[in-house]
Each structure stands twice: as structure tokens, then as C-alpha cells.
Length: 118
Image 1 (spheres, helix red, strand yellow):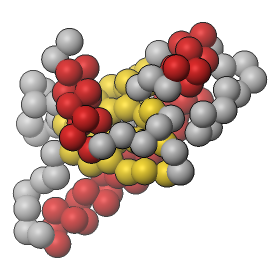
Image 2 (image 1 turned 60 degrees about the horizontal axis):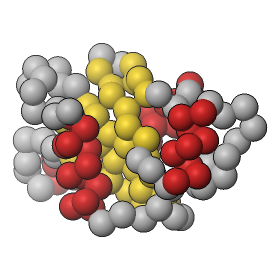
Image 3 (image 1 turned 180 degrees about the horizontal axis):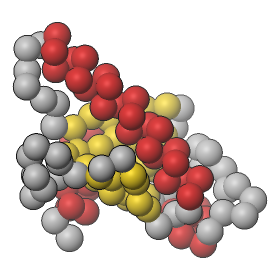
Image 4 (image 1 turned 90 degrees about the vertical axis):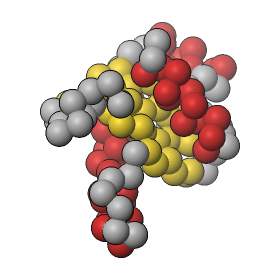
């Protein structure tokens, strides 16, 4: 869905894709929530599972307790997550985003943190 507006997409998804805006999501206890429709939210959840697994493997290899955030680039798209520092550290909530443009990591993570604190 890199920049393509799928048929039947809701208005929030259409607007975000058209204007190359970040689509924000929250995830906790095995479920994800977003405003851009179930297909986009499921896509974020799939990306999140992959990123969390990679973050766990990387954390183990580097002998770190946890990786607080991760992003990846696929084509012209940026996707990633941050753990919500305001949530329970034993079962933390996650916030993340997808945007149909390549963004520098610092700017992307900063935008997610602003979303967390909004």
C-alpha cells in the first residue's frame, strides 16, 4: 500500500496517503487500534510483530534488556514503534506509525513520542 489508495479505504486513510501523513496506532495485550481502517491496522500489527521479534533478537545479541524502539524502511515507506514509557513496564503498551515516505529515524520516533504524549 505504499502510497496507493486502495478501493474502499476509509476517509482517514485516503487523506493520510494523499498528504503523506503519518498514520498512528496503539497496541497492547495482543490487539492494535488505529483510525485508518481494519486492513491498515492489521498491516501495522504484522509489521509490529516482525519489528518486535527483531528487536528482541538484537537485544539478546547485544546483551541489552530491551530495545525501546525500532523502525524499518520498505520502498518509499517508513514503519515503526516505540514502547509507551507511561505504561506498565511489565506489560508495556506500544505506539507506532506507518507513513508513505522515507523519514529520518529521529524525526519518525519523535513524531511517535509526540503522539504518545498528546
